[in-house]
Amino acid sequence: MTKRILVTGGAGFIGSHLCEKLLNYGNDVVCLDNFFTGSKDNIRHLLSNDHFELIRHDITQEYSAEVDEIYNLACPASPPHYQYDAIKTIKTSVIGVTNMLELAMQSNATILQASTSEIYGDPIVHPQVESYWGNVNPIGLRSCYDEGKRCAETLMMDYHRQNNVDIRIVRIFNTYGPNMDIGDGRVVSNFIVQALRNEDITIYGDGSQTRSFCFVSDLIDGLIRMMNNKQKFIGPVNLGNPSERTILDLAKLIINLTNSNSKIVYKPLPSDDPTQRKPDITLAEKELGWIPKVGIEEGLKQTIEYFAAKINCLP
Ligand code: NAD
Ligand code: UDP
Image (cartoon, rainbow, N blue to C red):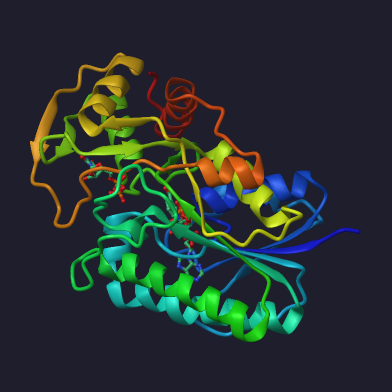
């Protein structure tokens, strides 16, 4: 039977890939977005598909529909974007997630929440396991996002325990790929665009902080496996690529892959910037049979091609 699937934040980076994949699997997809950071360009090629519906809506407002599944991705994800209107960001994770949980309850749908590695804050346990409760500043510039996402997990668990809502919680670690916005502000898109334009590569701090980067196709596979898992495993589960590197190494790799003349320059480190991050994905492998397949060089090449076409700059 064809499923009717709601993807909130469906015009964003990850959401647009998810909509496309779910359509390819023969589902009906409703993409809901307020276009704060998302773009019609990401989903333009889907608009002529009869099984695809686009709705401009903000999840902080109630929404009603008959759906079988909800992937709740709506939330700005890059630090400059989520700090632009911090109050709106936390409302999106608290009021918005409550609205989506009410919708799941009314339509008896399964709901998957796009949580984040940020719920671990600046982690003391390394690599991060799901049982770790994190080290989060509740009053800093990143708190609107981190604490919002933590509260969203709490709401998910409480609707599950109190109202029997069928939930899935996924903690996404730094993901990159085509359809990221040029002005998104996250490290992979910034470095690639700077390198392609032969502009200075801006490293915040001394570049010794680490991240582990997952290519978007691997993440989409993990999200869909989590939604469809037969054991009704609710998570939380980490999804990310455990291959960890420093930001300085990432800059050098991108300069090499783009044959760029860019120079590295150092800028102040933003407050509460986590010093290290790497997912332990043992649980995802055990419960979902999921491990990422795309290595960093392959993933970056595809992303560089995307940005090169977008900004009309040959690598
Ligand atoms: P993105 O900014 O490209 O996409 C977010 C989408 O949500 C955009 O289309 C935006 O317009 C929409 N949106 C924002 N607020 C909304 C609201 N109130 N109502 C309706 N739509 C709204 O970011 P992304 O990287 O695609 O992230 C998608 C989700 O995954 C987010 O929830 C993010 O927190 C989570 N996540 C992403 C990463 C990553 O590395 N990309 C890591 C951890 C978690
Ligand atoms: N970063 C950087 N230069 C940039 C953008 C980001 O050095 O132009 C750093 C940032 O300070 C952080 C890391 O890269 O240490 C990852 O940043 P991003 O915003 O992509 O994600 P997050 O900090 O949320 O993991």
